[in-house]
Image (cartoon, rainbow, N blue to C red; front, side, top):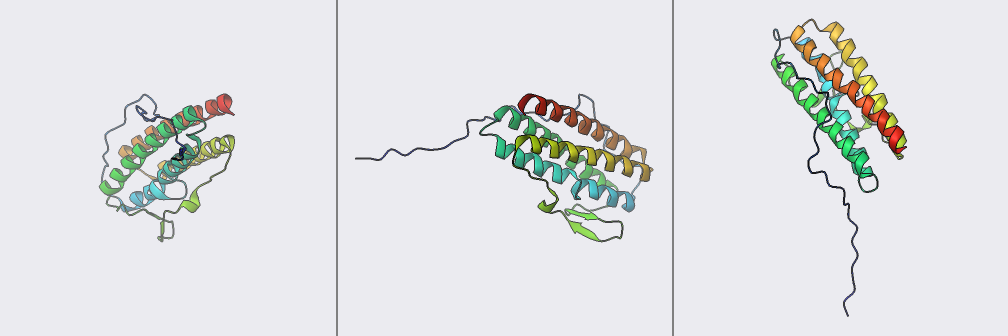
Length: 183
């Protein structure tokens, strides 16, 4: 007699998920001239403690842990992660155009390089705390982008950073709505 095996599966389908982005065009990715200091600043936005790399990883981790039980919430988080991936790509392009390198290290103010690490992430276990941590990370990113814009005197770079900030503000709005709806 054959024993019947049971399986556990996740029925949440992620087909058709699109990046959660403000409905605005991005400026062309270009720089006025090479500037390694600007590239180093952007390396922190790319893969520092407060960075697109951290945001992507945190959103994907939260999405993975929520998808089996809260599929609509997980789908939204994946859409936000996809937007953060696009930000990472645009920052990477600008870093290279500015004369920097993409090696997943952020150049600190003292010139030392620090490799990205998952230690940068805030990974709570409850959905509401996940969303609150995501909101705080978005706010920190906006603050860091604004600080970097004051230091960068390249209008092409700053135009892209302004556009990225619009997405980050949009993400905060979405995350607050998710807390209201699901938590």
